[in-house]
Amino acid sequence: VQEHRSLLKDIGVDVDRHAKMMEMGLESYKAQFMTQKNRPEAMKYFDWFMSEMQGQRIAEINELRKKKKPAIGAFCIFVPEEIIVGAGGACFGLCGGSPATIADAETELPRNICPLIKSAHGFKLQKTCAYTQSSDFIYGETTCEAKKKTWEILNKHHPVKVMNIPHMKREKDLKLWKEELFEFKEHIQTITQEELSLEQMKEGVKIVNAKREALQRLDRLRSMNKDVVPISGKDGLFVTQMGFLDDPVRYTQKVNELCDELEKRVEEKISVFEKDTPRLMVLGTPFAPPNWKLHTAVETSGGAIINEESCIGHRYYKDNVDLDDVKTEDELMQKLLDKYSSVDCACFTPNAPRIDKILKMYKDRQANGVIYYTLSFCHTYNVEAHLVTQALEKEGIPCLVIESDYSPEDAGQIKTRVEAFLESI
Ligand code: BJ8
Image 1 (cartoon, rainbow, N blue to C red):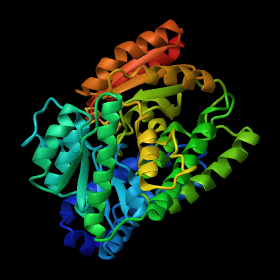
Image 2: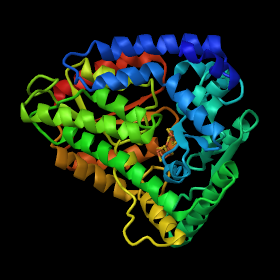
Image 3: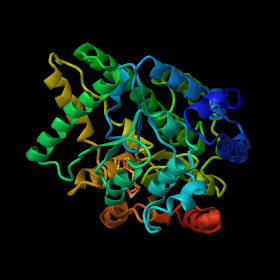
Image 4: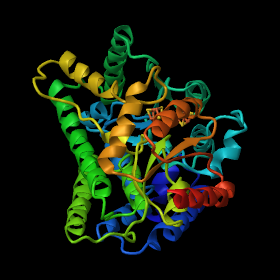
């Protein structure tokens, strides 16, 4: 990061404060990740990326910007990255997982909203996220109340555009959504100053499909073998988190290299956990880095996390965009809509397919229990927990519900609850 200090300064980063935050982040990463035993060799790339995510990767993104390629920051998996990648640009998740920016955010936002939103807003106020500073604009959406109102305030500090995501999936809602996809493309073209062709967009789809396929492969290797868990849940989560920042082609290659190693581990029955360690699925809201609190609590208490149903997880990569028979832009937009409207975020009502999916995921993976995790004040996921846990109970599936924010204060209490849960299953 140090060698990129002048670039960081040019894009408006508060370099001293940023350096301190990176130092803290790296310390925390070392303590939580590098101390794990028997990590796959291929994690070395991701360790390197951790040290360069606010350095070399930022330099790469700013090289693209010099060539008038779009650099778009997002907070939600509804932002169609295929179109950005097709235009030769970069789509990335903005910083939003740290408690260190929340006090600043609370100078403009209420205290009782979700920490993800406050953290991200605080990063902009502090100018300590090089991704936020590198984005031509931030692409928001109307998924939850707190986010959609925050865009109006964030827009005082950084250009923000908003995609209107409907809250139901009726025909008339999907029609509106498709129009939003066309408008999104137009917004991207305002940066490139040229027409984005169908072929370019299809190329973007292929690149992102390959990324999702690599993550699907990683998910299978992590979770589908009852006797071998070849990588810790924490490493699996971290790899997935980096998929929102890294160059998609390089990242896909590195995830596939990791999967090659994990495949060998499965064949040779090399597990990072002891035999009969309970294998847990985590459901709910996203884990933005460096929010590793739950994974650390579980995996230092005798449990293993085998996948995340969240948006930094299975919800993100579960479906590809089908390119078969796509001959027109309208057909492509329809296929993008088909993919995005199959996302089962709790912002939709009704959202029954999510419950069916969770039950199927659980059975396919022969897991031993579930943790339903929601960020504090996330009303949609918090309320939806009732129907999900009811369905789990009916099937006799053990479930622990955890609501938490980013503060380290409840880490001990979470660990105690997880330990009691693990003993009970
Ligand atoms: S598709 S889960 S990424 S909206 S910000 S809803 S945690 S109160 S992130 Fe999300 Fe898109 Fe849905 Fe996925 Fe709750 Fe916080 Fe809102 Fe959040």
